[in-house]
Length: 73
Image 1 (cartoon, rainbow, N blue to C red):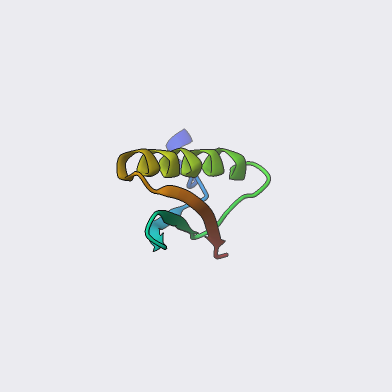
Image 2: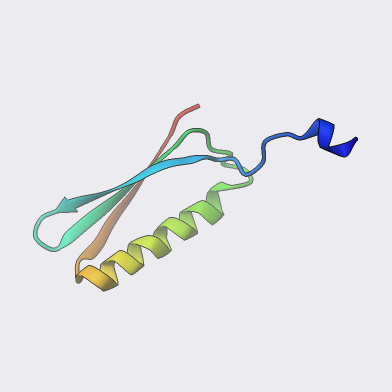
């Protein structure tokens, strides 16, 4: 059966996102991934994280200063 050969999909696996407040009006997003396929998945994930940073910036009136991505293998 086709269901007998299932394999995990959707890597990389985002573990958590931390918002680090910097100064009075800036913040950094720290994202931790369990694994990261830089060839196939990285660009889409970076775009999504930047959109999240833009949303947080808009809602909090703080400047989205940095995005830090940590990838564990």
